[in-house]
Length: 313
Image 1 (cartoon, rainbow, N blue to C red):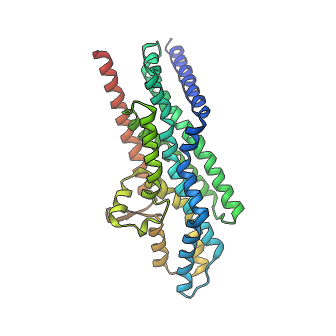
Image 2: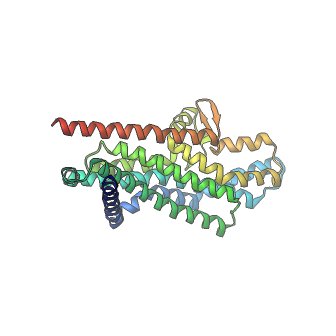
Image 3: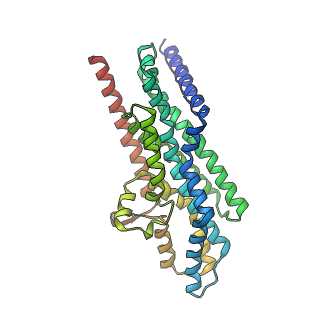
């Protein structure tokens, strides 16, 4: 009997998730604006950021009297841009996906579902599953586009382990972003409120996670603030896998000393300045995993609180 009941619950969960996914993709404007931050990064990179950062790395070699390895530099800078684009998208897409949850609240659809025989956990979890699904789909498409960009543009330097690391980082980033944004947007009641949050975050997020410019040139307080944002750890982890192989090629082909390579690594946020201490990918994974655990707990507490209020009325 319990197995049949669980099977029915999972079937309803799948239907609610599918419903939300279909509604989301029907709204072309929401889909576009969810990717706007990533599109801005790509546009800025093509117009001038790419040349600026390439010249910056090239000057390090020329000033040291060394011949710059052009292809390795391109792969390094392309990886920096793609890392920022993916990290920004994981948050902005997940935020935008919450418009469906806000719309259901605003139109009374959520209340109708709650008063129906559908279990509360099924309704709550469907919003998480839908959000995660949308975010993963969008990030997978962007990741494939990024791989093609590297391959066709001559900047491909990724190993099989790098690719596996990028895929794992994307999954962990999407999970963290989903849990965080659903928690935040649980306090918002209308689509307009969610849209306002999406607009503010999309326009400023790239700056704080080092997608528009290298974090190393920013003031220390900004670096410290950045290190407290889970998205920065997503970006740093992606940079580690996108940029480590090109950086190693820079060291081998260019002949730069280790201290210069370490400076480049820190300057481009492959390591993060966390309140005066430089942290690497191992700590970034821990920080992202910790954000998942914390926001799983916070979302559960919020759900129980809402349930308690419902029964107290």
